[in-house]
Amino acid sequence: MPIIRILPHAELCPQGDTLDVPSGTSLCEALLENGIAIEHACEMSCACTTCHVVVKQGFASLGEMDESEEDLLDRAWGLTPTSRLSCQAIVSNEDVTIEIPKYTINHARENH
Image 1 (cartoon, rainbow, N blue to C red):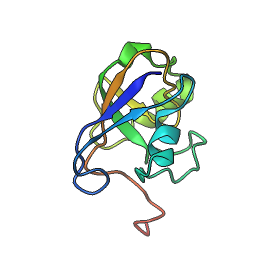
Image 2: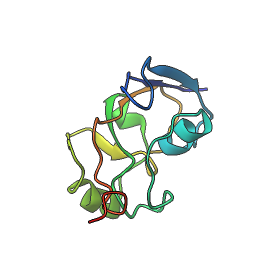
Image 3: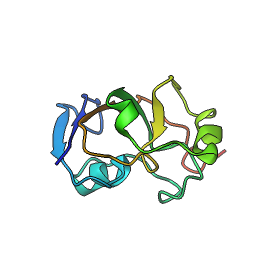
Image 4: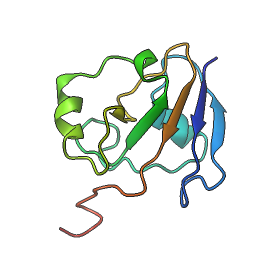
């Protein structure tokens, strides 16, 4: 099984973590199933950017990014060339290292 390494995040995962997950699992599902409460305001339907992550290693091994994910990522806080929406990034057979950005844009929570 592939391993997802999560770099430390002050609120969601202060010590970082390492998860063994089955291939075919989205990064978001893996995080949530292991007690890491990443935001996912659209319930993983690829309609927001709250589950944005930065892939530090293993980017090429994740499933292909479709046009709707690319369009949404343009609105994500802290966008990088290796940014993905964790609800759309499907783990293959290779290990992945991710960073959860410090901030997220959640208009519903922020009362905009």
